[in-house]
Amino acid sequence: MRKTIAAGLGLSLLLAAGAAAQDNAVFFDPALSTAFTAPSAFDGLYAGVLAGPISARKNNFNAIGADIRPEIGGVVGWNQPVADGLVVGGEVQATLATDFSSAYLRLMALARLGFAAGDNSLIYVLGGAGRLGESWAFEAGLGAEVMVTDNMALRLEAAGIGQLGPVPNGNNVPAVSAMRITSGAIWQLDGAPAATTFNSGPVTDFSGLYAGLNIGGFTDPQYNFFNDYGYGWHLSRFEMGGFAGYSHALNDTFRAGVEAQLGINYDTSGDAGADLLALARVGVVPTEGVHVYAAGGLGLAEGRGAYALGGGVEYALWGQASLRGEALLLGRLDGTPGLSGVTGPSTSKVTIGTVWHFD
Image (tube, rainbow, N blue to C red; front, side, top):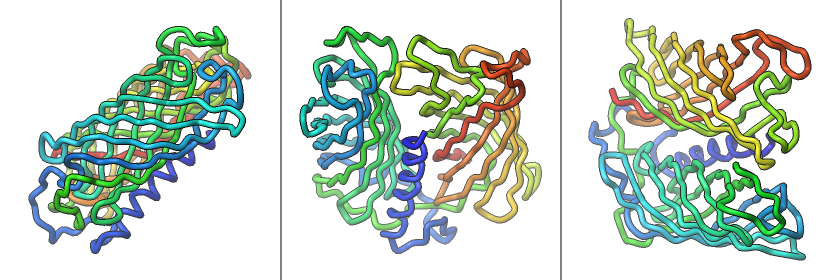
């Protein structure tokens, strides 16, 4: 859970650092141009350095040595803007993870799909495959990059890693069994014009269609949903996913709408699950650029019927993009108590995310 909190704080710090490095304020500026173009700062060849912790708690990828250790290495890749605010690309990451008595290599080929929150920020999903230690593996995760100088960005990303085939110690886990949280400094090498302003239009009014990505934690202290899949009881997991919805403006202040969420949660023991929720939302816009809402609905968590209650806050960053924090409490529809005998909404899903509004 500490890794989850660290990832969330790191993403917030990245956004703040990028804003501080620009001439504009951290929030929207309605006086800016209404145009939104593909982000020139994320176009073409780039390279950088990477560092962060990697955890393979089952020692299945590395047969000896510490299961949690630092890794350091580099990345080279290419970004291609394909539409206004939408970027696709690919990269190769190579890092060495060491506990200073043994080491193993992580070599991954990864595809990326990102969308811009202004010219200087990119939020993306990633996925691919390669080698981890002595085994083939896949990766999937989320990340953010923020330009802090004319040609350098800071990066923070988190990814789950799973096995593709057998591992050297025979501890075969058919799910995510490793995780990394990686920071980096990325240099743009193609000579494209630097992004030094937030390319924005009038701030979103939080109505119409929207979609986004989120990252956070899924905690089940009473084990109302989590199962022991043979890898032990763990009360919290890393969560990442996405959402899409529609909000209707009842007037200048009140909003009502619906949203669908899909989340994937996992820890590094091999336990993994999913949640799918359909939510109704009612909110207010007390001042321009801020949306406070309550949410409730039904869905599935770990394959069990669930209800969810909670809410969140959105803050307009620039243009049609906003930053969102949300907390939901989940309970079982069948009322069956969890492992500890407690019923009721005791499971939490807490996330932060970036929202793109299509209004």
